[in-house]
Image (cartoon, rainbow, N blue to C red):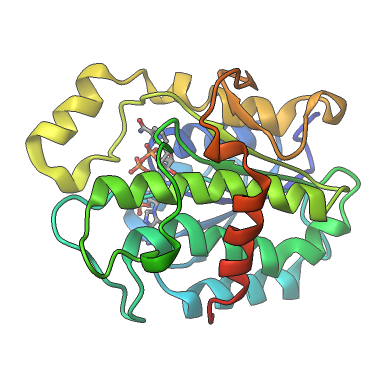
Length: 268
Ligand SMILES: NC(=O)c1ccc[n+]([C@@H]2O[C@H](COP(=O)([O-])OP(=O)(O)OC[C@H]3O[C@@H](n4cnc5c(N)ncnc54)[C@H](OP(=O)(O)O)[C@@H]3O)[C@@H](O)[C@H]2O)c1
């Protein structure tokens, strides 16, 4: 698909692999609506193409809803929603100003709210796509009894669970919305700022062992651009192709239904 004149909403476009994908989309002539939080970082995207910046903090449901209202009041349809923003909390449990565990909020609830709010605009596109950046780190299962790790917090477990929830949510929404191409993807281990909160060693780990952000952005860009007929909606992609091996839980549609049921019950 040619991205020229496509309207794309993207989160996590100011850093790492999202920044590469965002620059690419702008250079291809897309209208790129970027939900950003830091004006300084937005400068990297200015003067490239048709950029529509909307300030939004994905740790706040109010902020996300405001951003969605701005989009809905200005654009009759959108073609692609790329939920790429994500965080990994290192150290102590972090809580948003609204009392939600930070990983759950940014990695799961924010994409959920964006999909629910912007879904009607996607329905008006001739080729609607949602691309959720997940991770190969999605082992384990969903801790429904304590989804936000109130009792015993582990940033690693919270991150892993958030990506599993995203993969499952993707599978379930694909069944509910047959017109959409909705997929999840793993970008590889990428040299980005994802480990920023973990100090020197975690930063060093990503920088030392990660592939370049350009390579990390390849699957996301591929899923934005490839022919719709080649996309299997609901699936999980790695290296621009359907992933051959994922965990049993990440394919479990009963679990997927429970995740969506849980999210339907969250107040936002
Ligand atoms: N790096 C890897 O090895 C790897 C592996 C698997 C999956 N992933 C996933 O890839 C995605 C992109 O991450 P990355 O590696 O490129 O890391 P990154 O460089 O840290 O980029 C993360 C992006 O998310 C944005 N973001 C985080 N919290 C936000 C908030 N509260 N409100 C608005 N934006 C927020 C950041 O905004 P700022 O620029 O303002 O900070 C940034 O643009 C994430 O979903 C991550 O989980 C990464």
